[in-house]
Image (cartoon, rainbow, N blue to C red):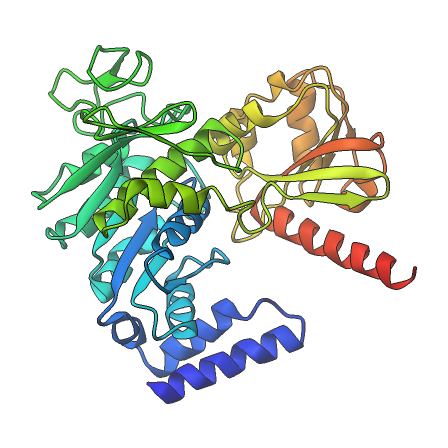
Amino acid sequence: MPVAVRVGRAAGWVSRRLGIGAGVVIGGRVTLALAPSALSRLAAGRQVVLVSGTNGKTTTSHLLAAALRTAGRVAHNATGANMPDGAVAALAADRDAPMAVLEIDELHLAAVAAAVDPAVVVLLNLSRDQLDRGSEVRAVASVLAGALAAHPRTVAVVNADDPMVVWAASQSTRASTVWVSTGGRWNGDATSCPRCGTTLRRGVNVVGSADGDLWRCRCGLARPVPEWVAAEAAAVTSDGLEIPVGLRLPGRFNMGNAVTAMAAAAQLGIEPRRAAAAMSQLPDVAGRYTIVTYRGRKLRLLLAKNPAGWAEMLGLLDEPRPLLVVVNAREPDGRDTSWLWDVPFEELTGRPVVAAGEHAADLGVRLTYAGIEHVTAADPLAAIALLPTGDVDVVANYTAFHGLRRRLIAETAGAEATT
């Protein structure tokens, strides 16, 4: 296997040198091709945490890795390459780290868990995403249920507010399940019970959180009482202990991610206040929430890739700050853009809006039907020029976000080089 790892690293280096990509995926893919058992062999002897779900994987894994680093080195697929090849590359990059945090795509969780025998699995949420690749949400929940059933001794840290992941975690007997209330806003993909199909009752009074976050079905499936609750700026434990979390990342949803990460870190012996202090030092996640100055504008870069992500992101947009929305539909995004019709763009009133990206036309049609005045320019850099100077919010889906960020960095570096 050492030869396979070295060849994989060399392939990654060539990819970076030629400007093809970051070299992470190709490096892991080459290693796996030469040594199919590489993932299990690289994970042997480590405490591994797997983080999965539709939204929040990257942020939660970054927060968790920061918390665990207070106890030692941590291997982490920080770029967000969340297939088995990305996991291999992360483990190969730091073969001596005793712990690993791996963000894993939902449909690959079972295979990766079988290889690494995780100490902890974190399940965040499930919603529609990449409609051309992903199955119906309940079918994805069944995949997660199977992954957990195969590892009954693994601790599961699960979002109690999401009926789909609660149902998945409840399908098998576990040594330990830790329930977390994240306070998420989106419930559009869990209106009916995943067990029996009946419409869920919401607002049922269950101890542990405010009305509106609660749910129950007549078949007996109900929101568990959480051991951890994400409050305004703190984590609240089941025994009433309130732990301040001075998070630099914005939004209620990121507080939910942070409390989930804190609960997972506690399973590996990290004292919660120590975890909170480490997480509070994280200024951004893989470029998200960063500010880039470009031609008289301060661009705040945000990522939203599906209706659930947009539901949370809308609360961050400062009215009447100008807005650039960039949408692609490449393989990592999902080719199907029909999800745009489930985003409440009607809330984007009272600000200049520009639609951009490879599917700017599709986005423009949706904005028109939402009654949002806008202009369309496919090229994101050209679109920026159509917005007023000053503060601008930029919301893009996955490949659009990373492509625009690379171009902004290159343009900024080029401008500095000529001054």
